[in-house]
Image: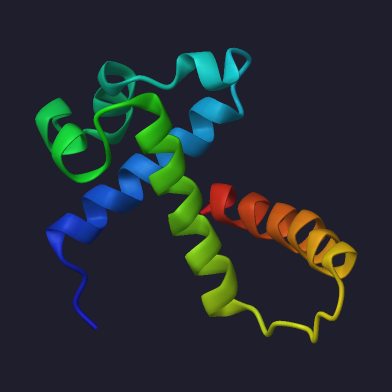
Length: 102
């Protein structure tokens, strides 16, 4: 499977967002300039493909990692909301830690 340049850029930006969110400044450190510098992707590209606002960036990054989580995990049978919350809390934390280490 060939990975496109666009996919590489998305991955780089999403990884940078995770790194920033885990930094001491957390959410406050997420901005286009810092992301561009860390991911080596231009600010205009981030604005166009990832989002114009911090909220857009966080939403897009979250959607990406949730998609990855469900693509690589076998989902349990979930009958109640509390089971879903437990799955998301426990399994997504594990997945995000793995994703950050790659």
